[in-house]
Image (tube, rainbow, N blue to C red; front, side):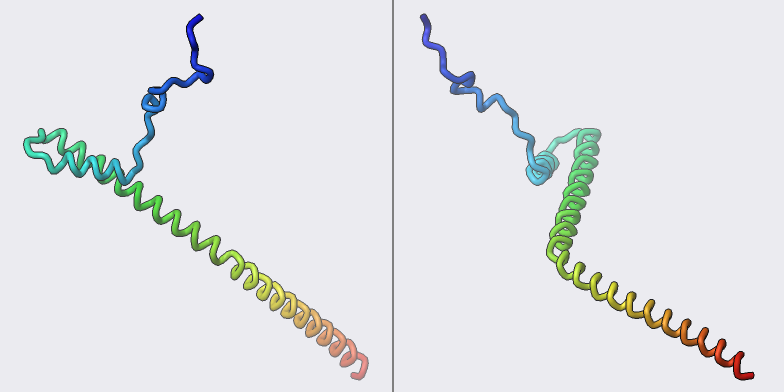
Length: 114
C-alpha cells in the first residue's frame, strides 16, 4: 500500500489558491504598467480607465469606513441627545395641553360671568 497523506492537502496546494489582490495593490500594479515605455495607445487608455475606476472605488470604500467609524463612535452621544429631545418634546406637549385646557376653562368661566 502506498502511503497517502492523512489530510487531503498536499504540500503545494496552498500555492494553488489565488488570493484576490487588494485595491491598493491593484492600483500600484496598474501605475507600474503605465510607467513602462512603449505601451500601445489603446492599452494605455484602458489602463488609465481602470486606474480611475480603482481609485474611485478605493476612495468610496475609505469614505464608507470613515462614516462607519464615526457612526459607532457617536452612537452613545446620539442616544443621549435623542433622549434629551424626547424629554423636551414631552414637556412642550404637556405645556401645550395645559395651556389649551386653561384657555378652555377661562372661556367657559368667562361665558358664565357675562
